[in-house]
Length: 359
Image (tube, rainbow, N blue to C red; front, top):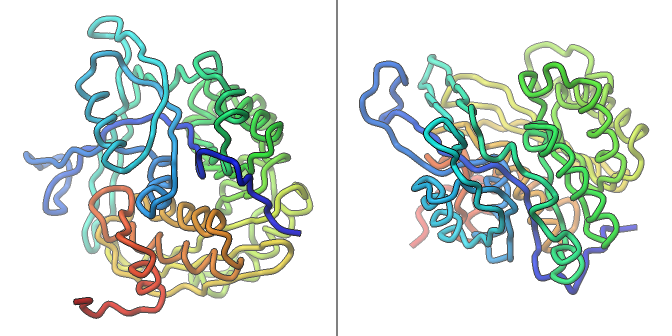
């Protein structure tokens, strides 16, 4: 048994997302006492997609834009620079108090000062994502997609976006596209919608081929018992995480691969970084190793992007988690939320611990 990907697909990877802007103080300063900020385009799902797009695979984003917005233009230009195709409706702003792209206010932290992030999502245009704006028969049938990656962030944004993700999963299943689902639980998104979202997430997970999450995600999205307490040392908890994934596998047997990152924070700029995966009933483990962190935001997305890229390249499963560990580590060395690998060799050098100059 293996993951059989469509060979006639125009796109290797498809991601639905709500795009926005991140503002970060320069020089790792706290947000509240800064006067200079770096502004960048961001979304968790395009963070994932960037691994494949920078390494040469065809990638497409489904999203929504505010018509005539300079931020929307900035987003489109950024996606083009990342070699990512995009499709989505142009929504009228509706006046100064109408729709806009979200803002992410992010202090990266430094040393003993931890990061602080506030999401400003009032009027977010991505909440309008709806199947009515997209021809799913064309996208999945005529054009073709090898893997669609769904995120619980988009899946829980609004009732419209929740149904949109569910319909994408159903269409993917119909046309033989493999489904990746990163649960990405956010308590504020689930408030007063717990039963509705639990049912939608359970249906998506039931037809998913690649299921990704951490202990909180599996517990709060899918009602799976989490790992037993194992102390502060994350390495000593690996067997407990395996037991949790085994429970997830029993509840969602359609999935071929399960993945879970492991992170222990020593300081803002030093983490122990590891991962476990179960692929076709075989365990693959990267025990936590120390990495130096410039900015942690996007590290988990980088891991998922590397995992999916490895699958799309048809590598042996042992390499999936190794490459994913390295692309996650690479993402934490970038000021952007997304890793920008120059080639596969750069990623494998990170895995091997080779930081020597390449001339």
